[in-house]
Amino acid sequence: MKKILIRLWKEDQGQDLVEYALIVAAVGLALITTVNQLSVAVVSLYSSITQGLTSIGATGQ
Image 1 (cartoon, rainbow, N blue to C red):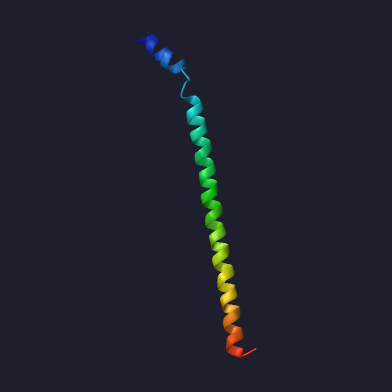
Image 2: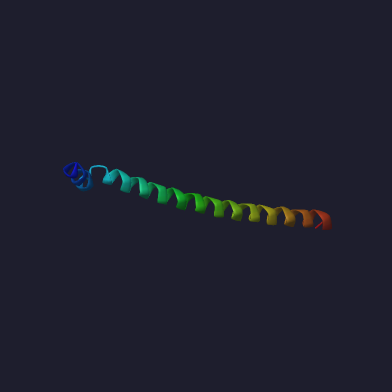
């Protein structure tokens, strides 16, 4: 039993796969955060443009 546990402890065949999965997860989280912040900025810009157009239409200029 001790030999089996030692062999399992030293075995590292799946290590690369786990590292790649962690990298993909980190990149995914970064993309989600970036897209979320970008969408807030786009909504703010759109709101600013529509308010500007509304004020131009209301004053008749």
